[in-house]
Amino acid sequence: SAVISQKPSRDICQRGTSLTIQCQVDSQVTMMFWYRQQPGQSLTLIATANQGSEATYESGFVIDKFPISRPNLTFSTLTVSNMSPEDSSIYLCSVELGGGETQYFGPGTRLLVL
Amino acid sequence: AQSVTQLGSHVSVSEGALVLLRCNYSSSVPPYLFWYVQYPNQGLQLLLKYTSAATLVKGINGFEAEFKKSETSFHLTKPSAHMSDAAEYFCAVSDPPRNIIQGAQKLVFGQGTRLTINP
Image 1 (cartoon, rainbow over the protein chains, first blue to last red):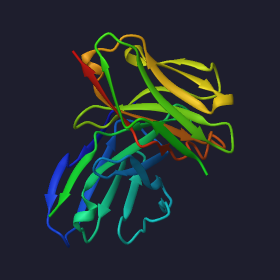
Image 2 (image 1 turned 180 degrees about the vertical axis):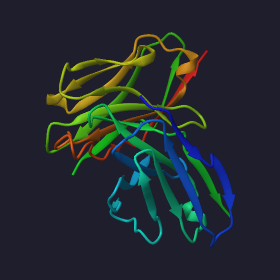
Image 3 (image 1 turned 135 degrees about the horizontal axis):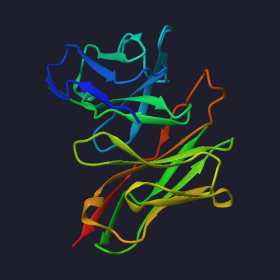
Image 4 (image 1 turned 45 degrees about the horizontal axis):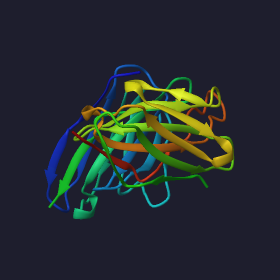
């Protein structure tokens, strides 16, 4: 497996502001994923981020709301823009390891929007 | 489209009793299947995975799961529950990687099952 860290671990934000979440991995990985876990619910994929290419967004998620950067093989950021209380969730990054079989998850960023 | 159904949003067992968490999937291709566990205020930890090898898969912490194609199921079991097993458990499905370059396919998660252990 790999050591995956996320910053911040939690935050409380005001509506209308933006928050950038960082995901750092201790080894080089090709694919990184960003998921959202709304309160009491399961995980939903926001987008897939490959180094050197534009992120691929899932239905219902758009780049203007969730811009993603992937500057190198160990790092990615997800920005939650123009936040509303509905954006209150846990945001998790994951990386692919094991020859394309398995995703391993970071600890998550717990976001509360007031 | 793929989907996962976890039967029972809450399961409660006594310490030392059998744990059975149910997962049924729908997939148009032979799937990869995963069980993840989420402890309070933590991220997801991989328990075990099925990737087209042995149908009975053993994972960490004494858990195992059996892939049954005829039943489209991947139920998670543990013979004897421990207090530390209390957590949220997620079953997930993905397509196999199309190739090494493309890598992993996206995970589709079930709704989760909250496991409570009674002393």
